[in-house]
Length: 450
Ligand code: ADP
Ligand code: MG
Image 1 (cartoon, rainbow, N blue to C red):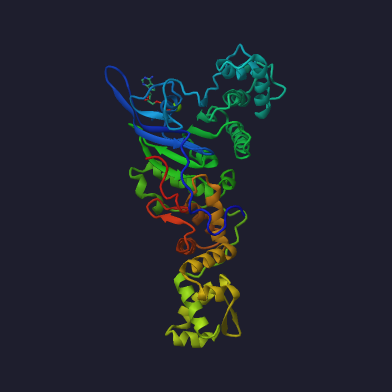
Image 2 (tube, rainbow, N blue to C red):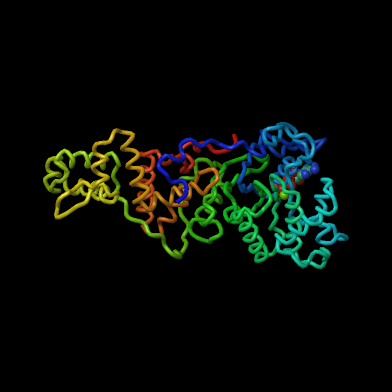
């Protein structure tokens, strides 16, 4: 497991954005000016795939053109690695919905175009173009003309042309929406595999789409724009990469949340109040049942057992502590699950880890509990892995809740997640933002952008 050592994650900081829209406002029209974009801020960092979702006509293409430096903002600015952009942005390349190929040029000729504009010599231009044509799966079609290609193949040329220049940021304007459903699905999957396999010569991707499921299938982060004028309504973390391409309950849950945000007037208050979609289970994950007690109670139990010489009869313990067995048992169960005690013939015994915990100072205690949680609690391990796998280390809690619903009832799934989050927070493994219902690694509490 990568990066799950107890103390990892506490000193991370945000990377410097590769590309940033800083309070970008756009007004069109001379006679009757129309406000299209209203102070839109958005940033893109190394390694991120961000989807920009918004209704048709809200100004998504306008924002991409502004980021590409093809259209100036009316107010605000674009920053490229922190520097204000003047003129055309040399750090980006664009993939268009309508492919925008030149009919009189071959596949290779179309792919070479961007390189031509950047003054690359002929020989290396052609070699680079051939590499890109192969990367997008068009080897053998180098000398074909666009009219001889299907829509999917034409868009492959569009990808190859944009990627040929090795842009820092790839901007894609509804790149799959002119294709039929199956072709789009295939191309999307291939593109995603190249991206997660780090085989694309670009550092970040910003994709405009009006298709929620497409955003959920691809993005690390989803930025939702409203219309008239376009403002950023909400930013949500996407799914961990291994859950994106699967049509599972996690993706359905994310789509549902985004859909509700897009169709409701007050997005921010809604995220944690949504219901869950019904999705048939495929292979349900295996999770233990976590007893709903606090780690403070567990530590208290361990201390009590140590004070009695490291072993005590359950019944006497309950009596001495003035507890009903029914109240003590979940605490014992939690301690047992964390391998701090074992129960033998009605007696509670401290384990090795339990003995260490009982004599540790507060920081040592946290560190022992952290290790036990990561070793013993499947759900916390999965949460941490998913957080590590997300570039901004943030996840919508709802995604895990719907995963748990494959194992537990809806109400119990909610309680299980609540307990797991409470335990993990207690030892500083993660944080939780109840307003957005987002869990995050320490240091990643703030959403990107403004
Ligand atoms: P989207 O890509 O989200 O569908 P666009 O960015 O293409 O939206 O357009 C947003 C709005 O700006 C639309 O109402 C469109 O008519 C208007 N618009 C786009 N370009 C221009 C322009 N050059 N001059 C005037 N209005 C424009
Ligand atoms: Mg558009």
